[in-house]
Image 1 (tube, rainbow, N blue to C red):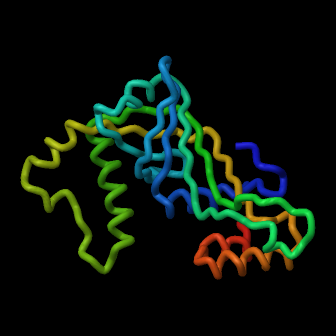
Image 2: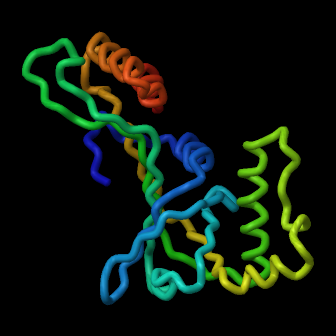
Length: 200
């Protein structure tokens, strides 16, 4: 990620909150044969550790112990027509919110993997309240443990966090408002709201 100065997002507390709220990312790792990538749910274990799990048969698993990995979390995004600025000589662009997390991966043991799965499900179940929360206790006895044999838990020890909030900050307020209005009219309310109040 190499955002221009107006678009650099440096508030780590806000970036962690964005990652937590999104709860889903793209994990990337290099192997000797090719680059590997997988979309997956993620959860903060603490301020510097991200927990995740993968199916044991996923080819990326055997490369996660070999060095640094990358997780990309993407938020609202939208195409921006230059006509919406109300200014001459502008070009089309894309506005978006994204965070990159980099660091070494550590394979979790059985108990830590169970704790990671519990933390992930608890966080997500909290978002669908007032439905009674699902827990693994609702499963047939022994089935969760059998399911767990097909999974491998990892944590990323986040060594670096970089954010981009490309939301027209280099444009005059009136031009940015015009784009936000056009995006909202097209149904892109989330990115429109961010353009009206970009994160720090």
